[in-house]
Length: 126
Image 1 (tube, rainbow, N blue to C red):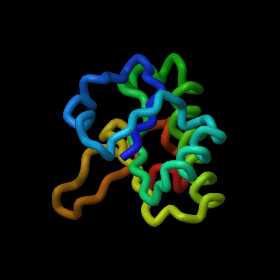
Image 2: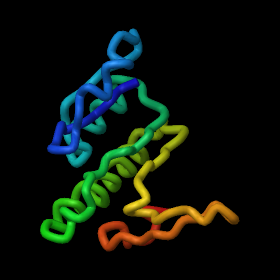
Image 3: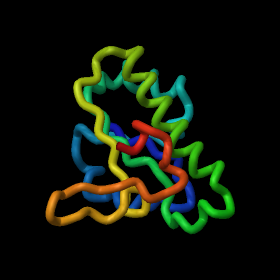
């Protein structure tokens, strides 16, 4: 397992403490917006599955700096997807986000709707 994180204001290394002793765990400080780094990691670490959880917390902050939120979510996701396409060995790609992006689920049909302006690009958050 390779964890890539730029350690922004919303990061907390304490969340990784349970995984650190594992022999198959590696932490890399970096940005998913760096295509060179992402491609390098996919190749050198033989990555075949990606769980993309990169976003910024406190969606209210996006109202004053929506560009930074869009950059992290949309551009970062685009870099990951492009690297997957070029690499050709990715078997599964999952994107995880919050109710601030998807909205609360309807318990009757387990569906969610995109509710945030920074996640309104088709196919990025669905």
